Figure 1: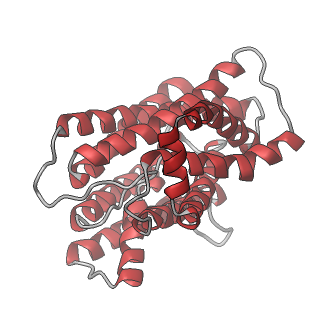
Figure 2: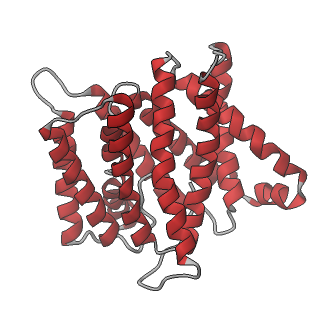
Length: 302
């Protein structure tokens, strides 16, 4: 993830490019979820999927190091800040990958939209930012919607949904870590160190449990790497050129694609309670984005 530009009602140059980038992202992230589910059906583990993804992306990035400009960007970066950001981000991704093995795409997507609300609360606690009445309403709606989906009762809770919620908390920490990065941090450095962390946390361990794709599994493996790189690049473009508040709102179109892909490809359906919970979480996230214009608070890419 990269730092986004923050704006207060004044659109930066080329906003159309930013909006187009986020609209592309709303399609790419559900496509990545489809690839994850197909690989999960083929019994690929979370470590194996993230391992392949990390190795493929790092192979794409390494040739850029032959250029002095990119080497200088890496050397100038605050390594500690990048590794903190990358650790939160890669662990958040692992939660989403794990949950997609069993949960509908739209359920994982909607719970992920609790990220802005969680980030808003963390920002309030850590940076003493005041939470508006709208923010408290967002917190209530988000918590209530999450509880409806988690379905807590005497027998326990939906474990996989809880994993997604933990992933959303880690994603919120990722967004706050972005705020701590020095202004000199380049987009290439953010993506490179994030990918390098993926290699360390999942690429190396995946060697011990190596799984070679066969047949059309290669398509989904390659798609994971290509889409992952595309998602991070488009997020950078979106938050650089367009209003962060409107970009955050556009991101909720992901729900439409998640519903469509889940229903038509995997025959996924939702009960009434889940639909109510999803609507409440989306409303919560939109309120959080609107009430947190000064902060870079957004759902994360899976």
